[in-house]
Length: 253
Length: 299
Image 1: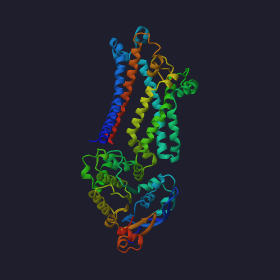
Image 2 (image 1 turned 45 degrees about the vertical axis):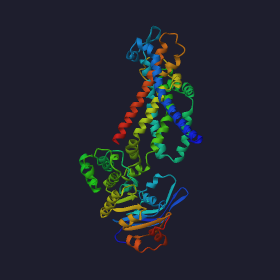
Image 3 (image 1 turned 180 degrees about the vertical axis):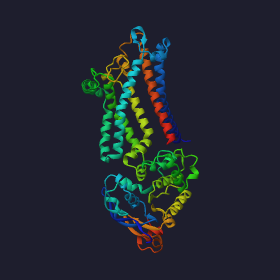
Image 4 (image 1 turned 90 degrees about the horizontal axis):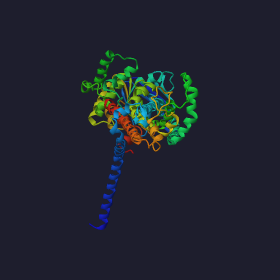
């Protein structure tokens, strides 16, 4: 693996009630690359993603064991403030969920709640992040319109700008293009490739083609276990596990 | 066409027709009700103008003075007081139940709320007389340095509040449940605390629902009769505070219809009171709808 590792997942076991969702998951996610978590629906990909910033705290009857190191800190057993840890990880969800406010405030919200409230400070930053998400040109004349008036592809880019605004160093994306048309998907994918020089990106997907297009590192999961992981080249061209081979060939149900 | 097909066709036609009839019936009923009430009250309206009746506080039926102002104001007092008490309780209960509490708490609460909603209002009235009226007289009034029998606007407001809580709470729970959990997740990911999510995002998102829940509670409270009548004192006056007795519109109608009808124009005045009651409830509904509509537009 080239470069440093950003997130180290060690022996994570997660139970929803009696259901064993993540089984001894151990993985290393490289810094400033795109890591794709691949696998069929219901294999625990999304849960693994949400364990990284402890959104799993929201669910009832969850038991987690193991460690997830980000830097020196074990997120699962940290003594630090969890809201602060979450702020360093932008989240892009399956469908865009804009906040119930106007376009400007959607991007400004994260900055405001961390205490930076002056219009003078916010204005150039909102513009900057909207530009980063390739949305500025489309919305610069309608910043006070409700975010819900945007198309779904625009909304997803707005959510990206919102996530970037709090200056995270990790982007967690949960099938961010599954609700989008091919064109909007391409915009997001290209954006990710552009952004990986600055951010560590972890993306969940069930689309093999998407993984082939943008992954630097691939983690393949099946029924809560990691079957195989490695740099994308090696993963696709020199597959080791039978199960992975079958999945890549599309012989899977 | 053979008989079989003809019968099928006729049956199909018949069922479509009675659905339309049922629909027309349920749609025109409120209109007919309003027209009927207006017609019945027209006797009085021919002699005096509507505005002068609404804004006159002179209630002396024997000499033909039917000022409804004290009753309208009493109604508004109890209703608004009930909403002031019930509103925050319902809002915070709903937020707690849907956002913080373990899921079994909601499972336990749902039947409790339904039972509360199903209790006949006369029982609330008796409870008010036995518990709330003495409580207001002995504990609440002394706090403000007042003396009262306890049969006051305050007692009416408290009893009403308890009665409308299940209705408002039920709607609010549904409203907060309908907000996707992902919205909470993305907001937390921006570094927000749970309370920030509730205050900035969920309350905003739920606002139209909150308005309609409160609007419905308001309408119910405004028309509630027997429980209020039993505790509110029924003194014809414009109450100058929550610790004075009042005489709401529904109580006026229920107490007097059928008894005082030998007095000329009395029945006409009561019908007018009912008509005004209906109109005010419609206005409440209309306002809450407008607020919701505007809110949805800017979100």
